[in-house]
Length: 265
Image (cartoon, rainbow, N blue to C red; front, side):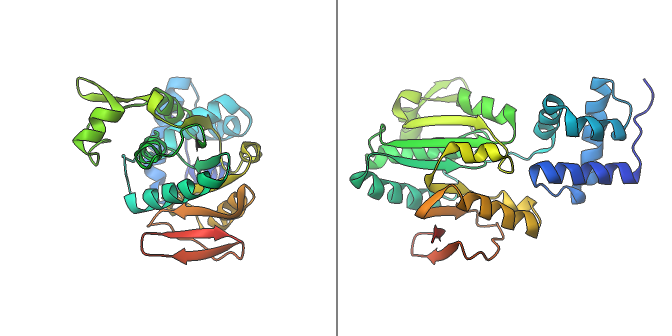
């Protein structure tokens, strides 16, 4: 097979396509992306970045493989715990007077955030049949990992030993979540910029933490506008501490003693 062809304009075209489909602005990582795509293309017997760009637009299965390759996933249990506690306490307050509560984690990465919320809901006594947590991610490999619920030592580093013993089964150096102790949990491969997002229904709480740091201003604004369409009135959305949240009159920013969140008006 001949050497992979990729001009400066070709890599820029691919980065623009990736941004259009995922929101991720990869321009600062273009050399890394180019090397990843070149290796991927070799395994697929694809000769050039031009061919990659063409197939990326029209071949849904190949596009998903590439998105799996270039998306960033790194998290662990109980990350930014104050936000998780605030979200679960709010969910608990709602559950007292209603039949059910829905939380969305977008993106959910490999599932640690979703299961952290599940553990916290169990600790404060939310009826597991009144709480549903949905995790979505653009990376289908991560969604499969979520469903398996198996984690290494690094992922559980912030958990107390008693929590590991109660909520996990340990196999050598791995920990498998005990699904029977969790609330209703579902994982789906969904791109937030695809209208399949709206098929998920309405949510009381959305957590979208440390995703918008990879977006430019236009995509950050588009993100929070789309979330507003699936967030109930007075529902809360929690962003990551590093996220740059653009102004939008759809939300009120609330800063309290425990956390910062945005309330749907």
